[in-house]
Image (cartoon, rainbow, N blue to C red; front, top):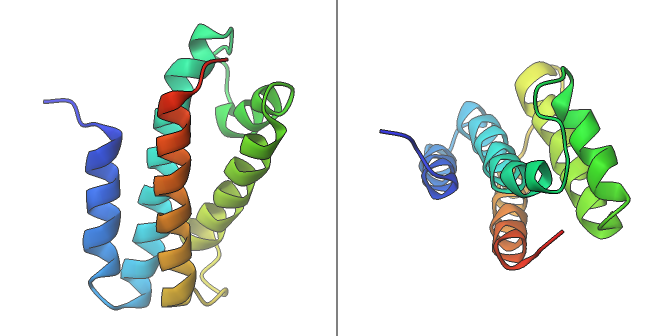
Length: 116
């Protein structure tokens, strides 16, 4: 059965409740992907090409011309996700993970209401 963005948020919350840095990292990653996957279909309807590589950076640039504030927030989340997934030398604090998941929930709510 396909999952929804809310499933990713629930997984992020579960990860956050592990009270470990690994859980915090997973929380940030799942939170980012929840926002990304909520936004992607709307961007595709607006003309975004989802078949080309590097879709994450290109999505930020595509959104920037339409909703700069959203592009900025998505890019901030993307950078946090890169730290969480790839930069093991960077300490991820529980407060950061909690902040990312809360911001992700707000963005998802906004994205659900918007048109491009």
